[in-house]
Length: 169
Ligand SMILES: CC(C)(COP(=O)(O)OP(=O)(O)OC[C@H]1O[C@@H](n2cnc3c(N)ncnc32)[C@H](O)[C@@H]1OP(=O)(O)O)[C@@H](O)C(=O)NCCC(=O)NCCS
Image (tube, rainbow, N blue to C red; front, top):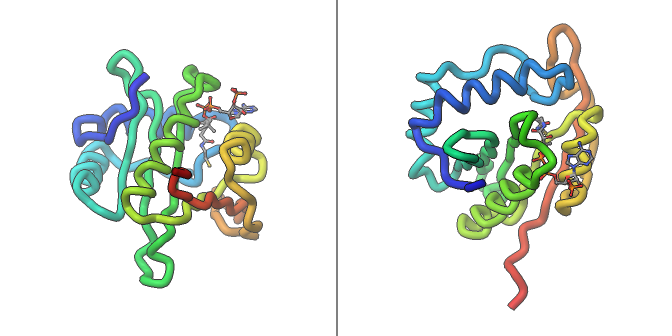
């Protein structure tokens, strides 16, 4: 397994990964409507490639993209030290340490970018993700009540954050 920055040529695989995960019965992802088109994804990956405030990393196994982690820094000056992250791993590749390895890569990116806090939203029913984030060191910061529209319902999300510390010398 290899973790690397996403390239525009990954767009097709990344769209199909998101569509596969989005179709799972677990209702894990925030997006309920269609993911980006391949063209939109390619444009986004191209824009992000050299952008200082955003990044996409992929996990690749035998040339196949099986995981994705996206980061985007807050645009407001007062919270410019904070970046939001999103993560997904293909169902048949879970529980092999890929999510963990992508989070480690996110922390490396944050350290290099001067980001001091990583945050994310996770649905209260998403036990695998909650377990992963808590084991990694994310703390629950609060409950965002009715924060995400899913179909006709507004559902709650747990806000979690990780304090990025430079490695001890
Ligand atoms: C959440 C998700 C990213 C985890 O990815 P993963 O590659 O399976 O995670 P890892 O293998 O790195 O797991 C590391 C640790 O997290 C915990 N963990 C992960 N999945 C777990 C599960 N299903 N049940 C219990 N603990 C779990 C365990 O402590 C695990 O260590 P272990 O396998 O040695 O026990 C993956 O399940 C996924 O993509 N789910 C669908 C999309 C999603 O929910 N994204 C997050 C939205 S906020």
